Length: 448
Image 1: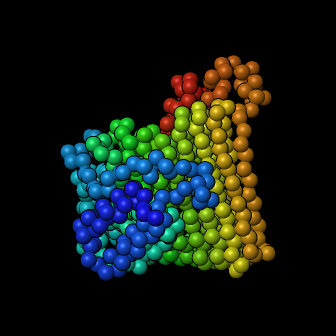
Image 2: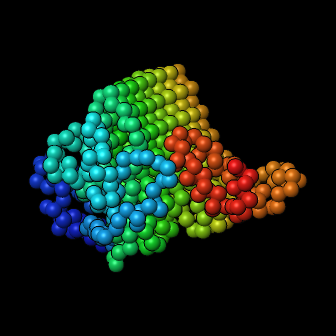
């Protein structure tokens, strides 16, 4: 049987472009890219026959021949990107436009700390590929699905962040991705690698935005490697056009007593799928995953998480909430996998969903798979509408029906946002949440 046209399209594009990719000719990198493209040609794009993609159909993406060549949008200046920055946030910044690093919009090299390495992946691939060999493409499974394989086949640009032993990043590191309108449908495939050595600490923020309302496809992969006692807080905010498609994988590998905290916020895109995975591969590792998704109209948002407890005394906590209106559809599938040696594991998983319309849907599937006998594990999920008694209480205190609804929605969603310790980001997201609700002016006064 011959390959589908879309598969042939990406295979032929890769063949034409691979000699021009950063680091081309480096044996280990060529080998990983070629193996990944071979895996993509074998797998293609996932279908509902794949259990992990049962509720998320990618047929539109499969039928559209997105252009994988990097198309930078020259001429943008600092003023053009101001509205995509977080007010009050002092951060070291790397900006990517249509998947390509833009030095003119990013923090100057002289502004970056000397004791950390914060650079474009393309630059490191071209100038110092040996620095990446131990980890790039080693943690995110290129065989997991066609999207992961396709990203691994390119591995062209993104961010490389390296924290040496004991170093603490004094500012957050902001990775800003901007997509601009193109004549042909654009395919952006950022690849990030974050390596935090023993006892180092950092905060990293990934944001994805659109300049315009055009359709395009983002296929992102972030690999995180935490050494012993390292601490990383990772924030991701997806605000892309409601004509865009977004697929992303975050894969972490944690050493002894390390701590990873992730906050994932999905607000935009026609279809958004996020896979968030961590392997707790040593004793005492801790992982916290928080998430909020807001969808309306015909938006589709899908969160898949997996935490592998491989060794004793590991801890993981997951807390995801969704608010869906119109004919939006949400999916949450979380798995905690406790391996036989992972005694004394403490894991909790919770997903709560609020449906604002009779046409909105959510499929939630928290899961525990346990092969150890001395553990403390729990999971739960809820799906419901606004509580009638609470609405009546607020109405009896003088609020009109719309303001009462908005206040309850805000209270539901802000529980997740309150966990964000990066204050400028939390305030920005709370303001955006208020703007999305009816009676926003009155609500501002109520929550002040």
